[in-house]
Image (cartoon, rainbow, N blue to C red):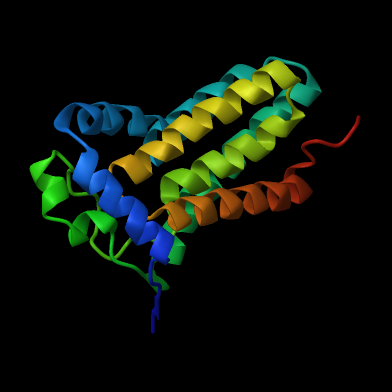
Length: 184
C-alpha cells in the first residue's frame, strides 16, 4: 500500500507561476544542467574519484570510500521511497506549461522525493568537511542543480526540500559506517 502525498498550496502556486512564465530556452537549458545531479552521472564521478583516491593518503581514501558508498545509497534510496509514496508530478498538471516548453519528467506518480535533491543533499552534507571556499562552491552548484527540478516542473518545491533533507540525513548516517569526518 502506498502513501499518497499532496502538494502544498505554495507548491501549486509556484508551479503555476513557472508554467505561465517559462519559455523553451530556459527549459532547454535546465534540461541540460539537471544532468549534473543525475544518479548515473554522479555514480560515474564517484567511482572515478574513488579510483583516484586509492593512491592517496588514508584520509583521502576514507573520503573516497565515503563519497562512493554515500552516492550508491543516495541513488538507491529515492527508488525505494518512490515505491512507498505516490505524488503526481507538477508537469502532469499543466497544459500551459507544455505549450511554453516544459517537458515530461519520469513516471507520473514519482514526484516524492526528488532523487536529484537526495543526491545533492547527501553530497552537500559531505562537503561540510571541505574548506569554506570549496564547500560554498559545492553548495552553490547544488542549489543550481536542484532548482532545475522545480523549473522543469519535475518536482514540487517541497519535494526538492524534502529530498535535500533526506540526502543530508543519509550522509550523516553513512559517516557512522565509513568513519568519514572523524579526526585521525
